[in-house]
Image (cartoon, rainbow, N blue to C red; front, side, top):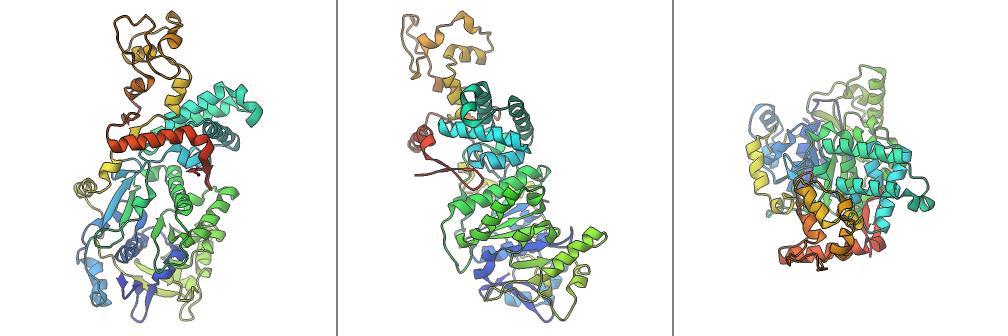
Length: 533
């Protein structure tokens, strides 16, 4: 709860613990066994940041975080705790919070889309679980696409590029080394699995604008961006890699701001162990770099996991604000986890930290936050404040109403498919207009019956000509016209011809980028695409 310019995190009969806004970007960890109160802690902190005017991004793994959008109710243990600690006198009131719902699969929130070029080969290899050799082939595919100005926006673009590179591997192997066809086929099969997981919904355009996550409502409250991850949690590689990409994008795109009075954005990374499972040293080094430096961009990152031992020591040492719910110690591994958690706190002489961790009640936690000098305070055993919003989930109708009236609905609801690698390679391979039209109409077509069609009817600039064969005066369609009428696998609309003045500006700009991309591409910390000057 935000009160007196600070965040009241928890209290007991004698003690109150506060998170100072100017130290909230020093990152944190929220740990504890399932059912001990981590979700309530995340909701309570998110509410406080919102009241403070700080936007939040978090994932909803079970569906109950969505209750932030609905006014809380005075019932049960919530009201009991409010009365016991006189929270209403400190400003506690039941209310709802400004929420934007997002969903990579586009089912329970506004669709989040990202182009494959923006994800880059390194992160994509992680999603696809590729071996080092397979990742090497994927790197070559991206390199060729960069140098030849071919944008890889969606999965069909990447498939086309893989086929193109392998079919022309003799041309590229002298420069890039061996291009193994078996590795390429394995990548194609992995992409089919990714499509089954919803990859066709996630990879595409319009791409997410990060600025839309860093907004306040008209009353100055920070927007709480909730990623619906109930279904997404079934695909942990896609989930964790997306959040990793989002962190890296924030790190690379936001300007340096130094130490602010409050963060620009707070990012909660739930199920953090998914990020660090089977993590290579190269990945760990890059994540360590992001965590170490992103606070100077005004971003605070809070990892949520069952046990702090799930987080590598190099990362854990950077998490200054710590909230530890109860841990179970049934096995030697569990006991080791309890010991790690206890040793991460400054000891309080009034109780044994290691004994307390296994005996905390639901909603009770050990808390150590940074003081004015940035030094961790001694650990305190307190009850986390209850949320002011609804303690539970919301129904689909309530969610749909919020999505319907979102200011971003028109921007993100409908996808489009502009000319990219797939279309460019079709053109490059000189597939003629007659073949495409007849294929779309279901007619058989044998290119041997018309061997001169490409040269006579569709010249290189895609403009129709009259060579005497077009006696009826019919205007042959351009390749762009044909491609606009080819349905995509996801049913999205192709858009290469703009209809509005704004679309014309955007289309002209993107076409220019596509032509100049080989000169301007810069790849970021994980190989995701940037446009340099």
